[in-house]
Length: 338
Image (cartoon, rainbow, N blue to C red; front, top):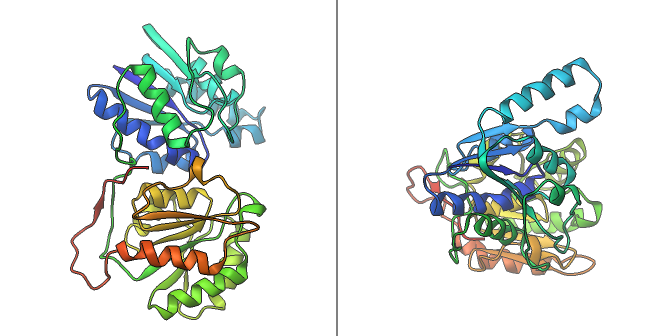
């Protein structure tokens, strides 16, 4: 059996789809699972033990120069890669026109089936072509967590029961014993999801007083500048260099945990099973936030959570972090239930 999963972007959406791949592997161990994804997230998908082959689709770059000879050549190469093998199941887990195009281009076996979501869910985009190209649509509850939505679509498509819990889908080996670093994720795609810099400074002082080292990560020039501003006001803190997602995951696995805004990197912390506090300025944690309450918490308030609320949450989950002084072999994380 060959299965193609289509989830092209973004980071958080890709992370939320990993458990569905793990479910599929456990329910159908004979299945060969391929995944189509944008290059920026391909290294992360390759860390998922359920995925046999990652097919990269560089749609963002192609859109910037659609008529260039290099774009046409890259498109032909992608299509040839996608159509190497016919699939028994093609499952569109994105629900957008771009994912519908991939689903339609994929080759099917004689009895192959294209699957898509049959309806939009709250807080998520949904475009009609995804349903037009599908042989069968899977209807899901409108009010549902992003992880459970992907898991439900795959389970109903292939006819297996969902376990109550399962691994998040990242297999990462830390390259060093646990450190005293705490990853601080301030960057997000939306201005209204940010946490004030003054709050980050106050939180950083709390961490330093407890012997923990705030480390700041970044994915853009603006985020890098903000990281340096924060670190310069917090002697003893650090700014990590730019890292690929797989490199970031490995480095994060050796830390005490992650405190961050609602962003893809914070969702990565959940997938790694790290102690984590996720900061929400909107009441949307039910849809994308962590649910493993003993280890990971979300904090919501408007206009934003207070430093005290975030610190109290970290004091609770941070107790689960490995102690830096402990004698550790390589730490292998198979993930926690979402």
